[in-house]
Length: 188
Image (cartoon, rainbow, N blue to C red; front, side, top):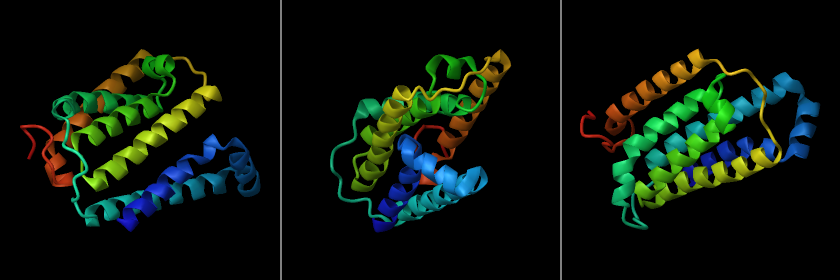
């Protein structure tokens, strides 16, 4: 469990640096853009690796609560929506233009449905941490008006929707092999 928690702290911690604008500015100034981005990327990657290894090694028990059947039933649809939001987050889409922060909204949906559909200690820690991060960062980004201006391109919306749906279907199909739990009846 310690590896999982260390990974979450590192991964989410580095992603919370932009919320602390003074710290980000000091780091950016001290390191320069390239080094700042390199440190950010390396810390993110290490955190992700620790999360994956830590989650795999963490015991499934104890169960803290019974999974919500409504969350289990809604999960495939929520995942389709989440993946479309993830895909549109860094593209010049009308989705991003309208929602402002589709990545954080997708993360909020993804973590929330997974939190409610599970109930084990390790999943509660993992998805609860990502849900809390999404809420904190969404509040911060909204209050800082952290939105880049761009002109939306309809073709990019089509690409985001198509790519997001295809990737979501792929992940759902192989969810059992990837994460040990079947998420859809047609999964392998």
